[in-house]
Image 1 (cartoon, rainbow, N blue to C red):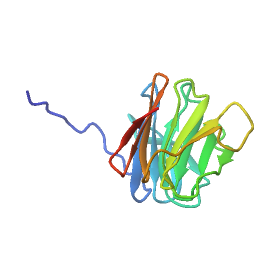
Image 2 (image 1 turned 120 degrees about the vertical axis):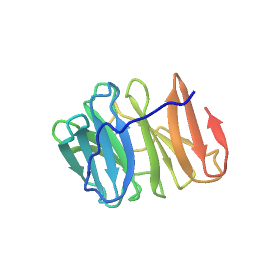
Image 3 (image 1 turned 90 degrees about the horizontal axis):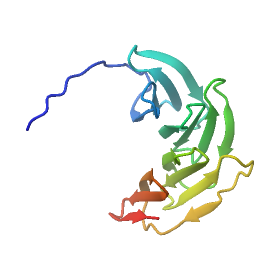
Image 4 (image 1 turned 180 degrees about the vertical axis):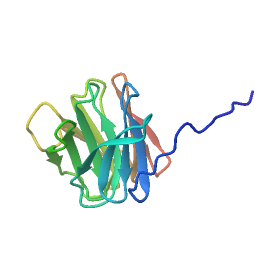
Length: 168
């Protein structure tokens, strides 16, 4: 069975290379991560930019919206993970623990933890509720750069460039 897809809308993000596009949990908004060091929040159905977040020192590689859409987390080649307040557009916290560029970032289901994966072969878990700037846990099983993290129920799934997938 062949499925026909059609283009609904094309948006010129004006961000250089787009590294990731992520929808909010409810699908009402999306985030674009650009090589211009900016993160943009969109209404994709109207093609309207709602807010631009600036604060990364290099390309933004990935982002994720919290379950209530009040916060965004982003990561980039500047080795940082930034937690943003959606309404004000200001950083709440800048998390620095990775020694290599950060490729991927996600909230857990309750948006109480941030999980980041880096070219330093590490997956770090950060507690959003506390004021602690260090990771609460560091997973070092990968032998190469972490390319992706996903959260499923109470499990963390990671993929790395060594060809291994890890379920924790």
